[in-house]
Image (cartoon, rainbow over all chains, first blue to last red; front, side):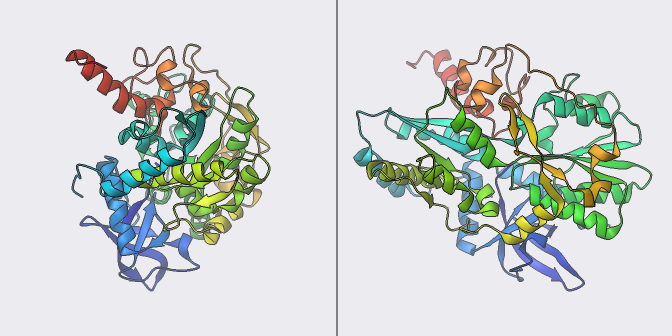
Length: 91
Length: 376
């Protein structure tokens, strides 16, 4: 459960500073970006996410590396299950 | 995401294994502990043991959150959730971990309101959607996960959500490493440091391991090339007679850690004087509890916690395996009474548990070879 999932920030919300819409392998979910307040991500940035929170900003190349790692570890299904399970954006 | 068949860059792997054979002293036995369960999983999955010389032994460490949780804490959490007004929310990893009267999943089958969440923020959302109920989030994890729980508690206070609390079972990695180094039956030459824990805490907290204990520690990523590179860096240090903290995973781990995550953790949590670890006993200042300022969101203060202490099933040797004294297959129950399908100990439940990793990759492979009569 300590593996992190790479995600691309596709939308930010000026009204909700700590919220971002991200995309992981075609799936879009809301995450919390509160742990990156010192250096917040922008639209188009890649982040590593863990239990619904962005942990760090990474480069696109690192993100693709991390996708490979998860795939090689056989964790891609678990990662997608986690991302699909996020309900942060639901009202 | 597509499957990939082999290592992305075989040339890098080949170069690292060459370096390893160049640096290794054939007359010496090496024991390196990979602290993190994610590394344990990767090592088995990629068969990295087979790429190392036989005199380098990788010892699996305690970095698997569900594995180190003593059964009494699971019983405590389930006991609080006996109240029909309580929803028990936890990560999927927790659901099959056995308590004395069965796992959370088995309690669900008996009528307890048990929900899988993928984020502590989802547990908070669950509380907002069920104002007539109380949602208890069974929080587990090292410093990778604790900041997210902390921010969620801060959000609960900001939003005034009072039917939500956290049963904190968050633990910290440094005291566990110290306990292992203090253990008289353990001899280790170096550590492969955890990747994502270090994203939060940085590399400084490991400095005592090098300076005082004279052991190299190299923070590593999770790819085969990363782990082999970390082994190269350790061997280089040992060859030079050095002990330093090095960061192989610079692309993700900042030396100073992530300040906002550390701030959130410090805002909500404080160290417990002591905490019980499965098989390792009580370790002082090794876990996090909710601070007074957030008492309202602390399950342990909202409910009567029985403080149950139970010993693990006698025949199961989870503690010895967790400390790296025994290999998974040396436990008496391994592969017989205890399998991933029917786990007796928590190390068989999580994919990061060394028993499950060993069973899924080594044991099944050996079993398959034996069945078809090939030499093992």
